[in-house]
Amino acid sequence: MALEDAKRQVDTAITRQSLRGLSNENTFGGITSFLRRRYTKDLTGVDIAVTGVPFDQAVTNRPGTRLGPRAIREASTLQAPDAPYGWGFDAISDFAIADYGDMAFDYAVMADAPAAIEAHVGGILDQGAACLALGGDHSISLPILRAHAARHGPLALLQFDAHTDTWADDDPARVDHGTMFYKAVKEGLIDVERSVQVGIRTDNPDTLGISIIDARKVHEAGPAATAAKIRSILGDAKVYLSFDIDALDPAFAPGTGTPVWGGLASWQAAAILRDLAGIGMVGGDVVEVSPPFDTTGATAVAAAHVAVELICLWCWTRR
Image 1 (spheres, rainbow, N blue to C red):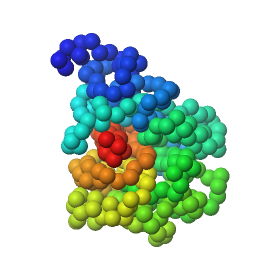
Image 2 (tube, rainbow, N blue to C red):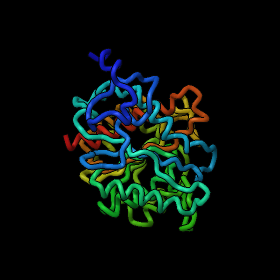
Image 3 (cartoon, rainbow, N blue to C red):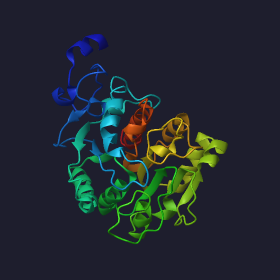
Image 4 (cartoon, rainbow, N blue to C red):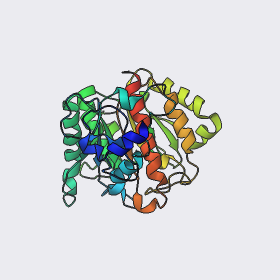
């Protein structure tokens, strides 16, 4: 049956009628929406909208993450024909998931980008869909958090990252991918007592009260104990989950702007995410994939898998 379907299915990103169901289109051809979902701006009946935010003007080291959403979409086609592994249900078939396309903005007017991102994500949320954003550099998380907090109130932040991104920055005009969670805390977007950063392995003396499970603790405790610790911190809070791909060790994700050795292995991240089933996730992002430095495509593949896991986490409590 799959072979017969593959003969008939082509460019399902624009030809498919249903928002649900797997795709047996050839993985090496066709229009590459995320997981071959339908490209649409009409989110009627949509549970989750995946959108790209190709913004990378706020990086401190290597650029290129503006090309991340396109690379993640292409890598996601490898997963389109099969139900997500290990979850016990098929989120792709049981839930309505759409690709909302990329956010449009003027790259030459950087100061307008945060407000544009907030409005873009807010427009998705106002249509009744959850939002999963594909970056883009990590600065995009601040306006996305603003959009979510405006509708949910302060959120617990679950951040996978090599860096805390809470370096002090009291200049409202600055846009920086290393200071946005400092600003999020100062703006009251984050409930610090319910927030946790995982995989950290760079120094920042002021944690602003956010719990940290650094990379070494993950290695020593293992994924199951790490997930249990995360759950104990999050409790029953509404959670925004931000996954910087540099949380993974450069051996698994070399295509990123600020790689740091000693990070998580991809199998550790996969196990932790699956053991978090049941958390109150309301939205999330996968950021910092820089295709120019991703010579094998491994980083984009990892990011696409993370994005699918985030979809499954959101769907778990609503299945």
